[in-house]
Length: 74
Image 1 (cartoon, rainbow, N blue to C red):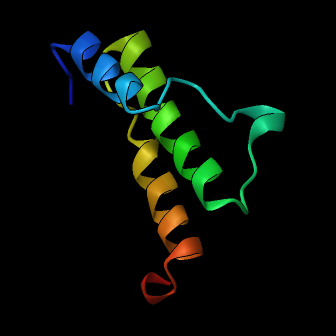
Image 2 (tube, one colour; image 1 turned 90 degrees about the horizontal axis):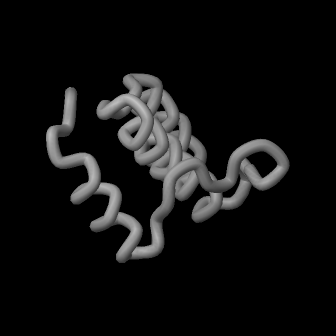
């Protein structure tokens, strides 16, 4: 999906405290629910900022997050 008003989307998330490309590398803590979630959102926003679209791998990341942190989904 290509987002035509990517700057509006990015600014809306930033106003809520979510930013592109956070919690990458050594800052990623996969056992921390909030850290992992912000990583996923950050990846989506980062790709949106760079190429104007959210990479499809975000779906896999969200499935991994749900399996790890929402036991009924596993």
